[in-house]
Image (cartoon, rainbow, N blue to C red; front, side, top):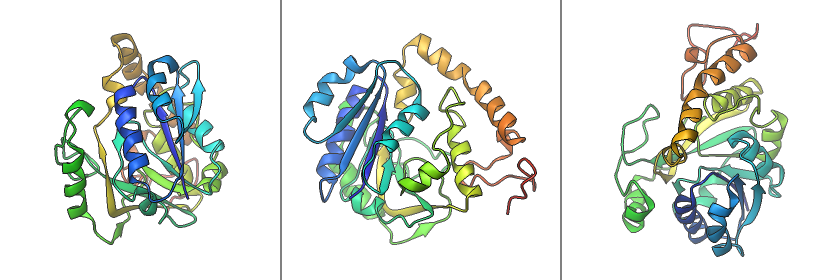
Length: 266
């Protein structure tokens, strides 16, 4: 079994379809942990709908994705964890696919997105840009045609599975970052420096609506959210000694033979 970790923030419609796909697509009853990062009452109806199949960890005040993820992983009871976004739709047999992760490695699950191509070269096919327009059967049928029994080394991207103990060894996501910007680069860098490999599987694909948490914020929240990108970059620079722009997005290897705080990166 595996522990599925889902942080959510003011996204009940997306959370609904995410949880339905997780429950319907699993081959055995896994642990599904939902961390509600503030505004709990907005998601209460959906949480009640799935209460017999999920564990809910509510945060009364919004504390950010990093805190939510760390809380979820800390409370996970299985040795393997799968971290996704609340705007993901999982494919059938997702638990088998994610459980293929090896010890001392991180396994990115490939995604299908409605627009693109983006910087991570996910397959592009529009099965709906909102839960109300989503074609689940179309997604499942198409996803099966893409499956390949292979892995590639361009991992280090959400969603991903790994062993809980490796997550804890590197200290999880750093809460010094006050936004989701760049903190994932920081996390995968820590894994790299601890010789924990990054790979991507093509044996299955999740659907990703794309930044739904950002799109669904009210105006005030979105302004704050976008304004947090520069401070996050400054935090990364302060911590590692190089600006985040010197990092490749999908491999997280320093560009131009840079060193990190005196560490020669190979």
